[in-house]
Length: 169
Image 1 (cartoon, rainbow, N blue to C red):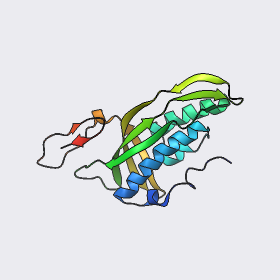
Image 2 (image 1 turned 180 degrees about the vertical axis):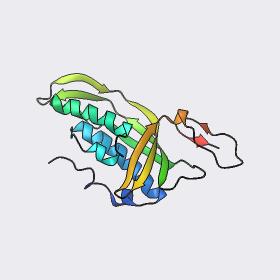
Image 3 (image 1 turned 90 degrees about the horizontal axis):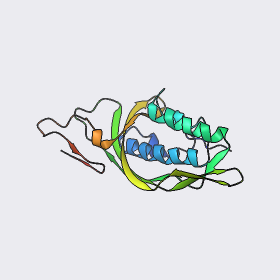
């Protein structure tokens, strides 16, 4: 049976709290790996607002794998850390988190397991995720590179100095 991203969402990721947003972000990236490893079209966009870029581009990849009857050699990534990004003033019903990703080396394979080459190389990186709380729970709005972060620091503090692993005020 196909993997249902909403039915399998952990209870913590359904909470309208900062910890719930962090749990949702972790689940969001874990699911991004799962629906590519064993391609399951139509599921990942259910975790996003309508037309959100991180979901649409990912869904295009999944759809291509499905159309070519391909799968991957294993999980694409693991989440090593999730942390809330302080934003002041915090917009109502919005959350910003930074997620540390461990990307694994994977290969594309046909249904008969014929190897078709590299899909992903091993590396570590960070991604910022902007989310909104909806009637259906947390949903992803936008993903971005932490080094290009442009969030407003708390009043009276110097500009944010960001790197791939952290943001210091």
